[in-house]
Amino acid sequence: MNWADWTIIGIVVISGLFSLRRGFMKEALSLATWVAAFIVARLFGEALASVLVDYIQTPSFRIVTSFAILFVLTLIVGALLSNLVEMLVHATGLSSTDRILGMGFGIVRGGLIVVVIVALLANTPAVQDIWWNQSQLIPHFVLMENWTKEIATEVGQVIWNAGR
View (cartoon, rainbow, N blue to C red):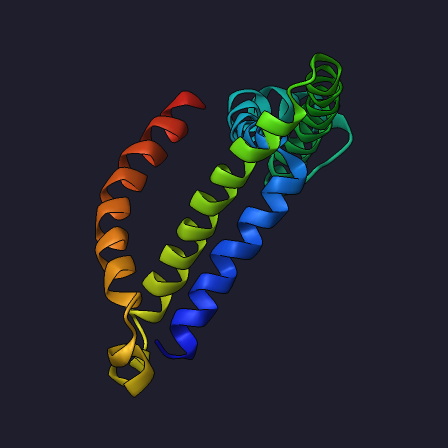
């Protein structure tokens, strides 16, 4: 194993440890909140932009502003909901289970972060470097990158269409 493999392991472990601390519910709600924020901003951005006509003259700036306002407000509501759910998890005594599940979530997220990094580096001269070719883990993440590319395209299309 070379330094690239140890870096990959480090990314996955650190992501898992952060999620162990935060717990599954907080991590899952955080992800859901970001997706919801995008969908809400896409669904209602134009409606809010029409309300802002008297205040913002430039159409492109008005659309960007309305999208940003809705996106941020949805993130705030999601954070409040996440904190409420976290209090409920602690009150029910499920916090240790929540944290263990959170660690699993974090490990998967760390793996996805590595897949993205490998996908970006695959388009650079790094693929010809010795460390890339001698890595024991990079080939596995290249396979995952091909698989996730197909899934990401489908999921992205569903999310994009949900906003319309």
